[in-house]
Length: 231
Image 1 (cartoon, rainbow, N blue to C red):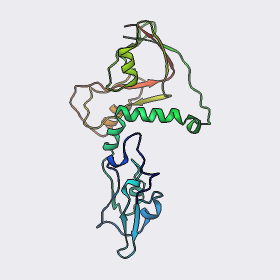
Image 2: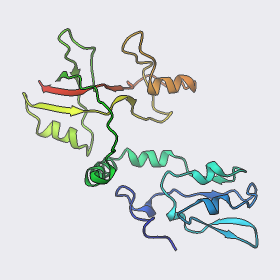
Image 3: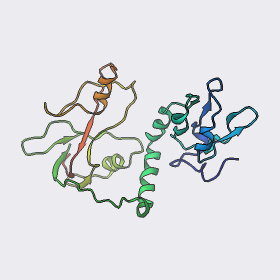
């Protein structure tokens, strides 16, 4: 029987609605039992007569986990495409559930390590970044409304001219993940000394050529940001 502590909703999505569990490739399986003894969630049981593992409680499987497949010596375990999980993560309600969980369990999840954050203040004029910095250091932003998005819903419905916002992004450079079928315009680099980043570098390394009709955005958050709204 599935274990209730493992089958609770995943970031608000009922576990039974998520197709994520291992499949044994019988012809390749050598019956070593590594998957059975290595899975702490009891997804597997062992058929001692056939000397083969059996997926008995697939809903016990942690969404996104592929440890058993990674440690299978005969590569006899298959999982659905990770794209199915990434598609769930892209949903606004799932992102909100993650954010709410972080805030609710902050006392438990907050890191005890102190890592310096470069608090360089940047003033932005909100009019994602549409231009290189102006001579006064300001940068024009475009805001696209995201269906169900908390910030963009507020920005479109409640933000007023002259509002002063303060935000701190994660330390370092990052890009939003996208699938190989998402077209991009090309390579993005702020200046000649900056290395290629994120989606563009990934595509170049994998020699993926896509139609040119969308701009891929590279986000850089080196500092705390003050946003002076001017629209």
